[in-house]
Amino acid sequence: MTKEYKTIVDIAGPLIFLEKTESVGYGELVQVNLPDGTTKRGQVLDTSAEMVVVQVFEGTQGLNDESGVVFSGETIKLPVAKDLLGRILSGSGEPLDGGPRIIPDKRVDVNGASMNPFSRRPPEEFIQTGISTIDGTNTLVRGQKLPIFSGSGLPHNEIALQIARQAKVPGSEEDFAVVFAAMGITNEEAQSFMEDFEKTGALERATVFLNLADDPAVERIITPRMALTAAEYLAYEHDMHVLVILTDITNYCEALRQMGAAREEVPGRRGYPGYMYTDLASLYERAGVIKGNKGSVTQFSILTMPGDDITHPIPDLSGYITEGQIVVSRELHRKGIYPPINVLPSLSRLMNSGIGDGKTRDDHKAVSDQLYAGYAEGRDLRGLVAIVGKESLSERDQRILEFADLFEDRFVRQAKDEDRNVEDTLSIAWEILSELPEAQLTRIDNKYIDKYHPAHQNAE
Picture 1: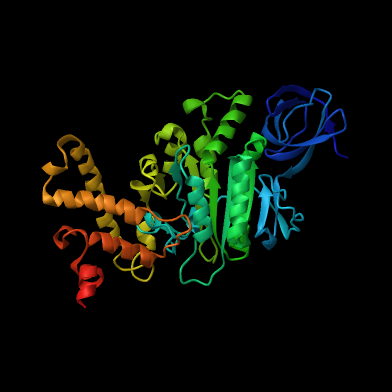
Picture 2: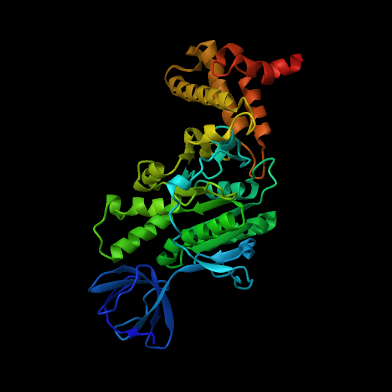
């Protein structure tokens, strides 16, 4: 017989505190029975010999010490099936698209299991996003976790949708899917996401989880785990290559801070919980490729840096856990350049594993290095021009300065629906590099110059 406990001693925000219960497990699902006969769902957040803390998903309004709590003995599970593809669900897995509930093959614990580091296979296969600044200079590799660092008001959502539409493994017939999870977004943004997925046909190979700003903060903590559980099922049960896009990790961390304050925990940096690093790692580390398994989970996590501060705890901790970052630039956005990705502070630590002969093209690494060097020097010269004027520069420096402008206008700038393959990206790179004298292409081997430089192509 199921026991109902009426031992609530305190209610704080979305949390209720009970005493004198029997042994309950961390993460156990709870049903809260209100005096008016309605029920709410909750989850055990903390447990000790004397006290149990329960977070209530729908909020604690209407609860009092007469409310009863029933422990289910089960953790949160996501019903999974291949029918997840093409569906739009709430942050807690309920259908939002008017379709029926998922008929599950099985139900899987959303907390997942840690991936044994020994079982990981080093990521090495190239994923094409169709965006030159990612494919050309900060390449994404299967199984990688590569966050996008953005700021308030920048078009990170548009970039996320473009990646969701365009991402593919070129030359591969293998199944590719996208799991998109949005946390703490407005109704307007949710409608925009849903319309874009349906209009472009991307929804056919996608599963979308939407947690709105007015949904409970507790649900925001579950949403990315729901998404990653769906991704792992598609990858490891159906041998699919899954790209997970999580936006916005900052909203997720704010929910963590809200929960920590309600529990009266001792805060860490800037009021965030001291365990935020561990919590974020439990999300990021669910990306990877397992030896002997055909499927893979790759992760793009988008976070808005408060005040554009890259040293803020959220981007700072994310940078320690993940394998690089893509940085969205406010300066490029003000210039009207889309996507405003600044390649200089951006980094993909696994890029070298996924490019080169047989994967992208043999000249890819050399071209990327030369673009980076030329653009970095050009950006430095802009600062010098502001002091001494352009006329004071040498002819060489003026050409480098023009190269930086050309790089932003031709290589970085592209349309929101423009899907460039890696050959297009490298061709554009060679076109703008040809504006520099060959003697200045010091990072490219002569054999690549002879093979790919437009001047040599024309000579043939």
